[in-house]
Image (cartoon, helix red, strand yellow):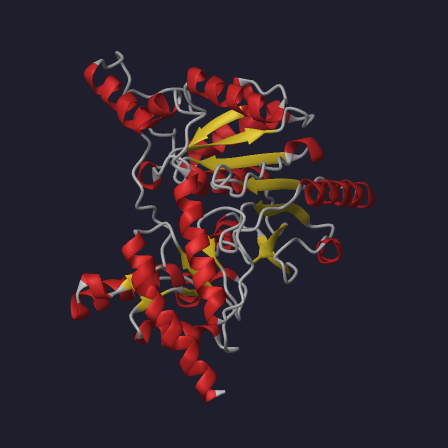
Length: 396
């Protein structure tokens, strides 16, 4: 057999997002693309900002000598300094280029962090609902994923986190704004989490990291400010990607940022740089490093995403769906009207609407809707949502 037993098991258990995406391809071939409403994949249809196109064109017409060659494995010093300057402006914390490692997106960054910090058998806490790939990333580096449920509002449950921490706990991954729920962890929440982890470190004589996955950091609504984790906990590593804020998911460009307050940051950044190379990423894409250097304060039009959120939230709650209103990102995570979330997703699929069951994010009983899509897809899906919940009500 060409695939290992473990990987075959992972393929059977996970991959819900891709599975629904592939189902969409089949349904579109059968019914026509305009008649299928695929809300399964977080693949932005908005185009990158005009500033990106201008910078890309400028580099194409006026290439820098050697701009496609290797550079230091942690990235161009000028790009790392631009990222550091942006973080300093956002946080007031004195970041320098030495605190930054450029990466092939946030997924690569998380793998690099875990490779760097984990000893075999050490534990990483995941807060459900969570991006399902996190568990596979932990397994990639001989760690053990420990899933801790959040509350009904999808905010971290500090008592549950406290109970889950052991002598083997090495890290906790947080994701805010969250995929799939869209909630933001408040500054008070992050302060409490930092206090809890500091207490646990003292009790166990251990070192625990926060790995903060922040690709949606600039996609927040209703005039909210983004609560930074850095001021609340020294042992923090932020991973970020320009997949969402610049609508560049296919370019695979992001970074890791180590808290300047962390006492062993030089050794840690050296380890991150080494693992960035030895995991085969080598360095972040050269051209994109040149481009994003000038775009650290630029984002797509957030108002457009908020408009789509408001449309969906109003429509779905009006139909009787129970939804925690997202504060950021571009997902809704409604409660399934029936206990079996996969069965309800199947019912939607019968009506040519594609979503992802909550079990694909470690939280059965819900389902995820992506709304980084054209308006015609969102509007066209409303009839299927209405018919599905109406049919469930009739059966009840």
